Length: 275
Length: 259
Image 1 (cartoon, rainbow over the protein chains, first blue to last red):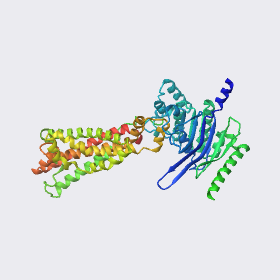
Image 2: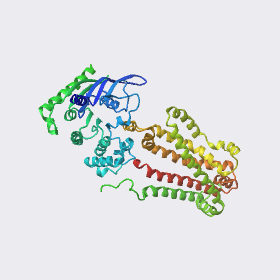
Image 3: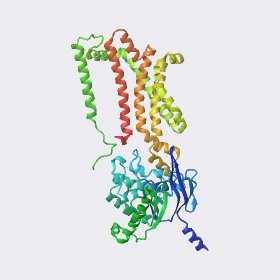
Image 4: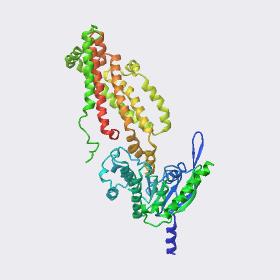
């Protein structure tokens, strides 16, 4: 009996999107940003959402994080429905860390103050968490920037700081909105590999938004492909490549066949829209 | 070490100090030469040397009490206006509808020269020269409030999203994000406020009479003491400029990310 209960607990998905819709009304028109979206993400999973701009992929993780409210549908976190009618409790928000497309540092705080901002807001400003912040700062090579202001640091350092800020309160889920999109190829690849090692070490759940197919295949367990007008799910592609993954895999036939399939999918989606 | 922290990057910035002094010297020189060579009457264009000499000799005895009064009115009024302007903007900005309602009223108050209210205010408040502080407060508060309010309501969407994603309370959002984000506009408001304060104090002196540098200017002009009139006007300019520069220095220490 106990075993059965144990098993059931384990199979509860970490995140569930059920029939989620988001409609934006402007003065002139109504935009269906997300239509009937369903998704299930397990604990410790690495899931990417991919699609052309305007397909609502950023909107999805913003809804999950309580930044915007869905128009209809249900989202469940650890099997418990989220009450989207009011701001989430700190307890709920603490489970998540959001990484923005831009570093989104507050220029009036030093990098360290920016990184530890969530600790202050969540009331976690204890020596233990400060120590963890220091550890993350040193792991990501940010020590020399820690007491500098954002205008004094490079783009790569700031983006790293954005990642560290989202992790400083030990969230269970990372929501990443095209986090390395603005960086050059080399830096991006490097940060992607760093991200994989962090994910493996901490066993956290990641939802990663990108429009870069190779990046999605390299990182994810499964990829949700979306289309625009209305923003909707087209297909879920499971990536059955061995881990740990490395940049050398990009040229391997299986990897290439995955990227080709995704490119075709996105291409056909766009083609259908033109017609 | 590639570079030091922006906080420590101090030292005297000669490039922003020398050019204004050179320009001032040129203006004074041209003035002096024009006054002495063109044959324009001394009543219209007294030589600069005479103006400066006059102010220096008359400052300790004749001008000092008036100088102190006007400076007191400007500084007191300006400080109150700054506190009041920022506080009002903070309150207004909490409610969208109030922001929309008050903005035109604030603009209307900014445009209204409070000098027109001085005779009425004298009726209400009496003749004590220190009461001119109210005129300064009335004139400077709206411009400070207007700029500050603008800063408080125009926050980047990115920063609002950040506040939401970490679950900031209303108070935390205001103190940690909105207020700091508005700092550049707040300082623009304060600097304009210092200018408005100086103008308002002088206007009040002139209209109310009997004391203050404004009163002295009109008195000097009335008795054909033109060079002293000019001299006192320069003195007033000096007060305004000093106040402005002090605020600018504070701004540079606070708004580190804009320099």
